[in-house]
Length: 266
Image (cartoon, rainbow, N blue to C red; front, side, top):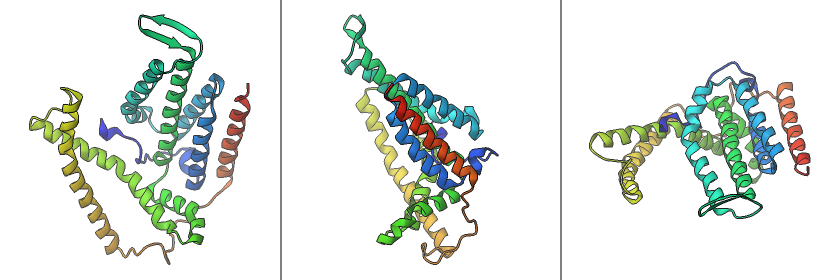
């Protein structure tokens, strides 16, 4: 299941989102995350769900691939939803069964948090699913370029962030392989008390850290052998171009945010 994580992966299709400039996608998704936190009623949440479904459809990424990626996170969403039902005791009482009492505010907060988690994960994942790692690095570097005035290494920061995103699925696959190898030797990760399960996960850390350090060393040696010496004096083979599609996409996100803000007061 760990190898199905979609964050950090890239799926090549000929969609509109793939043709957008990475800077417009990064700025737009940052704006959309802020917009999602502004939703406070059923109408705004429904609009955010429809908007997310529309973006997933425009990306042309197979729905089965996306479902496999978010399936491990659905348990966290379900746990958060149930937690709100039991702990929130505000608003009108909807019904009472034995020791459990369901409040209107508990249901509203549970649904709102669940929608926020799923939509944020989907929209942020679409950035990496529709953007090549090299383009993502260039886009981040361009957005971080004002930081050069205060002597912060914009290129190095962008490179570290893109490498970290790219290696998330790789380390998930490595964790899956180590778990299967240890299960073949008799380790049980799925049964017993919670303390015993956590204790069984501890032997994963040593081989996982060793694998991470080995991959980091191999990557550093590969970059040095190709003459990488940081961002100073580097030229680019592919130049980012902000065109009319990016402007329309950004203005559409701004307009959507204005609509959500106005609907907050209904």
